[in-house]
Image (cartoon, rainbow, N blue to C red):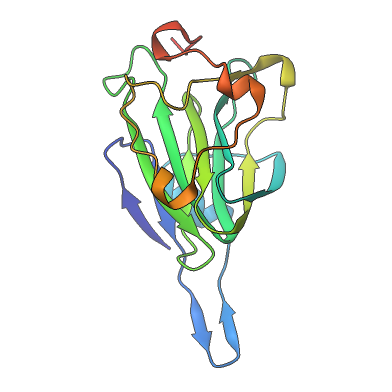
Length: 183
């Protein structure tokens, strides 16, 4: 597995070694040993989630303020523009983001540690997205950060995806200045 550092050191892009030929391909999509070596920490995943969305669906920017979740995410069908925002107030990268294209074709995975808001917009006709999480989903602790907050400076690829389709809670989410963040 190749580890690609990002502008925010805690966020890592992981590229598996893919073995392919005329019959198709094979790759190890998860190995606890390789993953922990890649991020330099011991992590235990407790839940897997799978979503399907159509072009233009924007999910996020989500996080849980308690029972906070680290996430290992990837697209297994289609392509998404994936965004992670540092919402740790004491962090030197507070308010900064990393954006990565994840697709079935590039097979990249993204490590989203605790303390970050996460979201994506579908840029292909449809996408299926997998999340491995370090804690269980707790709807009472779920929060959203406004996806288009000018303070974040995210350049969403709306020309590719069209106008974003949001759930009401995401459309009404607060900007970074008013969001409940991590210490």
